[in-house]
Amino acid sequence: MTTTFTGRPAAELPDDEGVDALTIGRRIRQLRSDRGMRLEELAAAVDRAPSQLSMIENGRREPKLTLLQAIARALGASIDALLESEPLDERATLEISLERAMRGQTFQALGIPPFRIGKTVPTEALKAMLALQGEIERLRDERAATPEEARRANVALRRLMRTQNNYFAELEDQARALLEAVDHPGGPLTQRTASDIAAHLGFTLHYVPDLPQTTRSVADIKNGRLYLSSRLASKGDPRTAVLQALSSRILGHREPTSYAEFLRQRVETNYLTGALLIPESHAVPFLQEAKKDRAISIEDLRDAYSVSYETAAHRFTNLATVHLGIPVHFLKVHESGTITKAYENDDVNFPTDRLGSIEGQMCCRRWTSRVVFDVDDHFNPYYQYTDTGNGTYWCTARVELSSEGAHSVSVGVRFDDTKWFLGRDTPNRGVSKHSVEVCCRRAPAELEAAWRENSWPNVRTPRTLLATLPTGAFPGVDTTDVYEFLEAHAPR
Image (cartoon, rainbow, N blue to C red; front, side, top):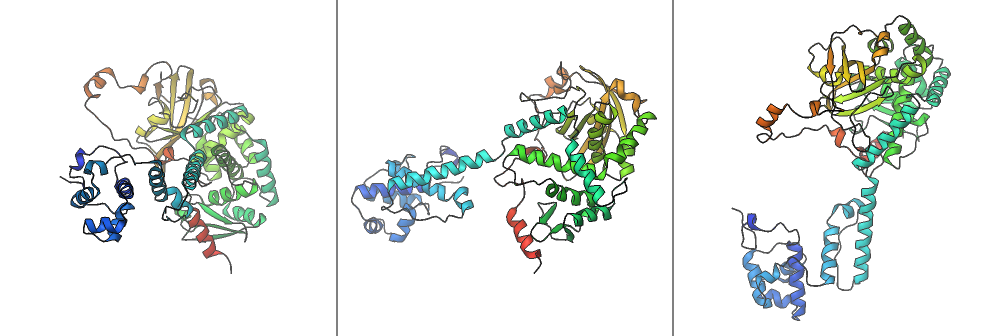
């Protein structure tokens, strides 16, 4: 059993952060000062060097039990008096608080080195420094996107998307003008055309092996250079990385000052990228012809433009209601069952929290988005009709892999609109009553009775659902790493 300098087993100590070396050291100093004893005198009384005792008083060294007992005797006090968690006066309290603050993350992040708090430092100065430190931490916490702020921002953005049927005419116009500027003939966007767009915007492309790990690309605006990973080809669509990086420049994005602004920029960037990869002027006739033939297929849209299934699904939601008159819904669900992205204008009843947020909620296990994970055939699309409290919906879904694990991507429509799609003859059916009953949110009564008190799962949550907007403007990006990278690669 581990024993602390108090002589009591560690397991028996109270859970009190106040009883630490810093508090004890300040209490020793205060008792010594009250008795008019100099540091050298106390050091001689306990047979220790003054420098050693000074480190103890400053909280930089933890005294052993025997030394602590000797100090208590020399001061005419009990050992319990030295171990009181509360300091003796206001000054000692302020000094201890500032000492702790100087050892904390805020001072370190600001690059302020710890300094000795001498007797000549006014008490009011200590109060001012602590007040400033507290305000900095408050602002840092306020700047960080709390889960509630993130949910509110998602809800507000989704309402805007729903109001506009997920169609943004100004972004379509920008994509059209850019494609015309590089004489794009229509159809799939080639890698060469993506490079032409970069050149038109004044950027040269540079593929490097040492791109900062926390970035997809880095733009050197000063020198007109766009850096991308030379390993990208094995991990994803190289056109997407180029277009996403350029979209922020096209849209004139500035450093986001809130999570809502950051989220809006992300949506605009992805929308414009999709509009360039799948041009409206070419894709709409393609989809209208498919509707005429009652053969709309997300897979066909994916293959026609050589994009990912998720990109095709997103782009379909942009164009389906405005150009085809079909309300739709979209879901991206992690293999854990948690919803990470969602959109609807067809009144499907998504699970929501009290703020109306869908992201982070558990998707009903009866829905296509969950059932598809249990389907062995990953080559062909999975289709399913699902009866819900809001009516019957038909969905098509695929499972795609990412660094965060497997995700399902699904697109769905109301029963009456199923006639326009391939896969409408599927025999797969499900029933979801999550909106009116416990449905899949609770285990069957027999299983619950047997296991509720006899199980304890260790939750595995995807990092994307726990991520918040940290102090920096760009979540998860190490700006020092980025700046060092740019400095190393800048033309000389």
